[in-house]
Amino acid sequence: MTVGKTARRRFEGLAIPGTLGLWTAAGCALSTPALAQEPDAGLEGRWAGSVVLPTGELPFSVTFETGDGEPAATMDIPVQGALGLPLTAVSYAEGRVHFELQASIGLAVWDGALDGDRIEGNFTQGVAIGTFAIERAEAVEPEPEEPVPYREEEVSFENGEIHLEGTLTLPEGAGPFPGVVMLTGSGPQNRDEELVGFPLFRVIADHLTRRGIAVLRYDDRGVGGSTGNVAQSTTSDFAGDALAGIARLSEHADIDPARVGLVGHSEGAVVAPIAASRSDAVRFVVLLAGTSVPGAEIIYEQAAALSRAAGAHEEDIVWATGFQRRLFAAMEAGEDLDAHREEFAAQIRAAIDRLSEAQRAPISDVDSYVQMQMDQQINALQSPWFRHFLTYDPAEALRETRVPVLALFGGLDLQVLPGQNRGPMAEALSGNPDVTLEVLPRANHLFQAATTGSNAEYAMLEKAFVDGFLDTISDWILARFGN
Image (cartoon, rainbow, N blue to C red; front, side, top):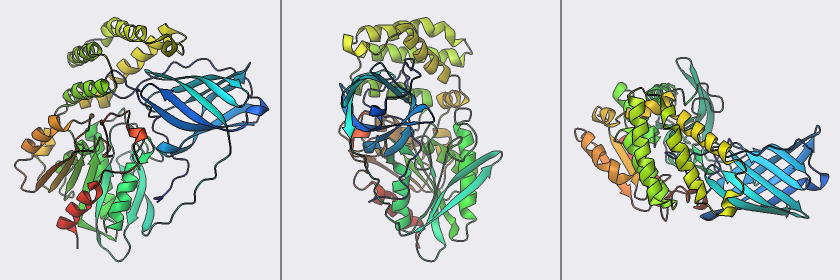
């Protein structure tokens, strides 16, 4: 079943197994210089194949075109639901084909050779290095969208100078209805919180609206029609956006303002208690994979768990955790982080040295690659968002949250580990008379039915929630705020 809009969505990242950075799941890739030459006419059309890495395979297709004397191409990644992604640095010269994809988790680069009806070569994205092969294929017609049995309205609202745009879905029949505002996880997300082609919030909104609960979901700052910049804002700032969304939802004629709440995922589950502690307009909160300890502690555990699941060497994990602690201590003391670049560079080079000759082949300039890795990851530490995240303790707002709380964790979540967060959350909410905490055993961070919980699995798993997840949310809300 198709839910809502599926055509050419904003792309959040090419999720391929192995794209792990030093302290987050982000990375960057070395971009080889593209040749400014128009593709041969024989290159035009659709080509389909896959990227192959030691940890998995991801199917994709590319459609080459020529127009206005400039080469152009778009990419489809069906398993991620990503269609018509614009490619950059597209070139074909002397039998070599090159194209790139800008993604939030790092630039993805394809560089290969054309041999008849087949293109083969190397793929690089961050620390992920592999191969790809694509062959000529027939064009694919998009499937028609299935109508939904409820109303959809495009809405906008303001939080001070920040303008936010989103979608409100309203159940069939006469209101007023209970309603929720959806809060996304970290990084610039669209209103569907579309991760690896899985539109989490669109699916949740569809389910809740069919059950009689109105849903407002909106684009993050700097995404779509929303203004502002996520990296230059803080989790506390996002709580202001959430309350502006609550105000916009509550003023609608078909919404009962006495039955409105927040549903937050990941960082959104940190934002929700802050908003609830600031305003009585928030009548309940649903926390999905929310944290309850300071951000630095989350990063240490998350990075180690994800790296271990990706097969990283244990000595690298130990070094990375120690390096993170030294960097964060330097930040807190106001020291210059440049003093740590030499140690970081040495570790990156050591990791490259352990690669096979074939894996190292796409890195044509090791010095540039190392420099780009250092610049991206150390510069990310300087953002207002990261500095606030490191030291903020979510338990502060949880202790001040007196409205009903539903908190769900994924038993296989390696980004927000339930063993680290469930206990402190229960303790922080101990003064609240209506709290439900539950761990869904087979669920990962996206609440998919998982095998290992690694983020390398996300793109390969079915784009659906683990059994019981959606009903747990809707049943809990309706039991307290239904008609």
